[in-house]
Structure formats: structure tokens, C-alpha cells
Length: 241
Image 1 (tube, rainbow, N blue to C red):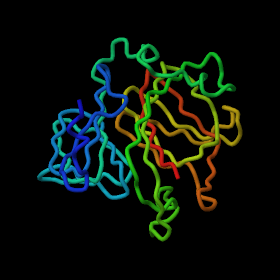
Image 2: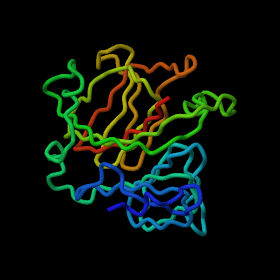
Image 3: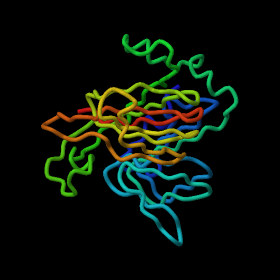
């Protein structure tokens, strides 16, 4: 049966809502578009657009582009797009690989065989226009907007997991902590002893982009990794050219 949200025009319908591809009995995950006065009982709310999100009622607050917050009985006053994600069942959450999540080693042959890092299904959200240098905070003035395809997926790892030092991505990305506690880390070399920045990721936090733009559809990343201090679920927000 055709889902009703497929018939909605997201340019005109307020609070158009659908489940994200990785929603299941363990994780509530929704996409809301053209958000106006949308009440949130308990979820990490991620601003999936280049414009500020406004939250609150008597005391409105700003969630900047590509940032996030944890609302509990709160309200989104306005936003272009938002993801609302919450782990609703933590017991046996680590059985993600039995629910269709893929071990990263199945996709990258060089990935360490003993690293328990699992990726959910990916959801293609739609198109977004943004200047890459505005996204990376290299400039505040938008002078070279281009169209990107916005994609989301979740990651899961148990506590004390080194999620692999790397520096290559064919897209722009940021991450948001959904469950547990982790860190995004930068290294001078592909060696954990060369750590030079340690960004703590509590629930509801989105880090600043690590990459820098070097040309049209070209960017560089430092050596970096995610490290799971506890059992963790985090969101990857990817902008593909």
C-alpha cells in the first residue's frame, strides 16, 4: 500500500513526517520537513539544513545549521528539515547486526577484522543547496552555492571501540551523538599517539566539520576517528556532490 507521505508535497505541507530508513523497535527515527510548532516529547533533534532552527516557546532559542539539541517536552518553532532520533530500547541494542546492520569490514577489505563497528541502512533525504566553505565554517558569506544530496545513516559500536583512523571521504560530513558517550578525534598521523584534538560527544551534540575545501568538489580531512567510550549510537550526516 502506498504510504500517504509519498503523496505529500514537502514544499507546501507543514510538518510532513516519515520514518527514516533505520527506524525500528529499538530506535525511533523520523524526518520532519517544513517544521512549524512541532512538539517533541523526547528526542535528539538535528537541524538538517543551512538555515537556523528555532526552538522553544516563551524563550526561543537558535540551533545553527547542521547542529543539534536534545528536546524533552520541547517544541521546534521553525525549521526546513529536522531528524528526530531516540534509542527507545537499549536492551539488546547491540544485536544491530542481526537486524540488517552491516559490519564495516564487509565493505572495506582493509578494515581491522576485530573492530565491532556496524552501519545502518542509509536514507537519501533529498537535495540541499549550500556553499561548501560555509558548511565547513571557512567563511560566513555564501558565494558559491551548489547542490548536494543529503544522506543519513547511524553507526553502532560497543564501549572502548577504536573506530579506525582514516582521512578519506568523497563527501562533506558531520556527526551527532544519539546514545552513549564517544569522541571525535584528530591525529597528526595515522597513529593514535599523535592525537592533537579530542572532541567529546555527549548525547545531542554535533561536532564542527573537520574537512577543509581545496577546490570544486575537493576537500581534505585530517586523520580522524570516532572512539566509543560507552556503547554508542551516532548519526552521520553526509552531503554528496
